Structures are given as C-alpha cells and as structure tokens.
Length: 397
Ligand SMILES: [Zn+2]
Image (spheres, rainbow, N blue to C red):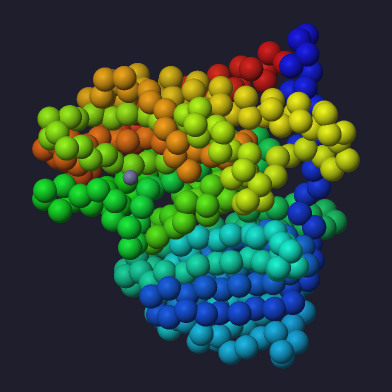
C-alpha cells in the first residue's frame, strides 16, 4: 500500500471518530423581520441538529422546528416575536411558530460559536410563499413529520437521541445543489426577459426530484425559493450538511449570440491559492482531530485538498459526456475559474453553466420544462456514475 493510501485511512478514521452532535439547552429564541422575510434564531450551548416542517392546523399555518435540546428560557431571552410569527409554543422536543402569512423555510444554518458569539446559533430563514404552495408543502410534511416523530420515539426507546438527525444516514451520499443567484440578484437575462435565477432554480428542483428517488442520496438545495443567498453561506451550508458533492447551477451570457451550449467549471490554480485563506476566514475547518501533530495535520490537509480537486475533475469528466448526449456543449467544455463557490477545501465541487441566455435556441431549451428535465436527467446520470465509482473504490479498499 502506498503512503498516501494509508493517510486516506487516517482521514476516514478521524471522520468516524468525530463526536456526533450533543444535545444541549436552548437558552434564547428571537424572531425578526417582516412579512416577506422572517428570521428565527435559536441560541444553544451545543450545536443544533434539527428538522423543520410546515403544518396547517384548523386553518392556521405553522412552522414546527424539532430538536433534541431541552428548551430552558428566561423572560429576558424571549422578546416578543416579530416578522410573520405572531406567537410560538414550546412542546417536548419542538417549537411551533404560528404564522400570520404562509411562509416556508428558505434556509437553515447551524452556526458554531465565534469569538463574538460564544454560543451555537440555529438560524432559520423563512420566506413568504403563495398559499397554495404552502398547503401543498404542509400536506407533504405531515407524513414526513409523523415518520420523523416515530423514528425519534424509537431512538429514545433505545436510550437517547444522540446524533444529528438532519444528517444523512452513514450509507447515504450527500448532494448539495446550488441554484445560482436569486432574490435581488437575477443573474443573466435573455432578450425575452427570461431570468437566470428562475431557470436555474427550476432546473435544480427537477434535478432534486430525480435524485430524491434514490435512497442512497440525501439531497439539499442552497435555496428552494427566489431568495438571495451569500456565496459564503452557500459553501458553509454545503459543509454543514456534510456534502459529498456540490453542484452550482448557472446559465451563461456572451456578447456573441451565436455561442451556445453547456460548460463545466472546476477551480483554477489561481482559485486554489485562495482556498486556505478563505477557509480560515469562514471557519471551514478540515476534519482533522485536535492535537494532531502539526506536520501530520499539514500532510492530511494537503491530502484532503488534493483528493477534493481530483474528485471535482473526475465528476466534471463524467458530467460533460452526459451533457453532450443531452444537448449542445461549448468547445473546451471543461474550464477552470476562480469562483468563490468552488473554494471549499474538502467538498468536490463544480459550477455548471447549462447554456447561454444570449442564444435563441438555448433560451428555448433552458426555459422549457422538457429542456430542463433533459439537463437534470443528464446531471443525475453523471452523479450516479460518480458515486458508483466511489462505491467501487471503497469496496476495493
Ligand atoms: Zn450565474
């Protein structure tokens, strides 16, 4: 066995040995914002694994956040809620937020303590949605919530609710799809006013739908509605979810309207030089155990980054032929760029440009349901091929 392979096993062992989330106490709940965007913040003394569901009960709309923390609040830490939350109730293992307008969770971030904020914070952002959309989601969530409560009860019976229950099972691959732009940032536009932010969201939702059928996958989107999400948050979310693969979905624009087709970007060497600094600024710590000797942790860090880079290229190499079979691709379709969303040191990542909004036939393809489904199916096939390769690699070891 080569030296580098032995280090791979060390990394795997560290990941398994990493402590699972500990249950703790929630000590404050604040709700701010307005009836378009509302932010719920829970402050806790340990990280905050959670699951949230929307629900409808006797005509009133609610968001239920379920978590294994005990909730111990003093009056000082429970200011009256704002935004679209008129009140909330605390029950065993859950907080129910009563809404004045239909809203859905656009993102949830579990933020580790910093030098300024000494405690863990769970930030849940809600965004206003059409009533019909809420009702559909509530019907779906009702089943999911019942299944979840049953599984939690079973876990309790086995002696404890340890573990991050929003996390994937150990046998699942976590795929994070990142629809580019959103909210105040529309991205590129076609001459017919088709917007990149809407096209990439629709395509990403179709991809999620396909992938969700495979029980081996746990799929997350960095946004599921028309909201703006910072680049840092997109990468932080992917890392918090334990992403095995990150795919940012965009649509291109060019001065020359004749240019058409898809392209795939991985991180350029200029981008690679930004990885360490960006990871440090954002607290993207590598899964290396505390107390590991400096020279060993340096080797491990380099190994993780090298593996990440190589896996990103492997995925890009599988994606391009699938895209080519499903539609036009540009010449030199595998490109390198210094994109921020590709900077995580430990998550294989590509940025996919599904086509050009400045090209007439691409606009028709990208904005039609059938064209979007074709693109999504091509990406899903590449994802299947990528993880089949991973399975084989693990089996061989
Ligand atoms: Zn874009």
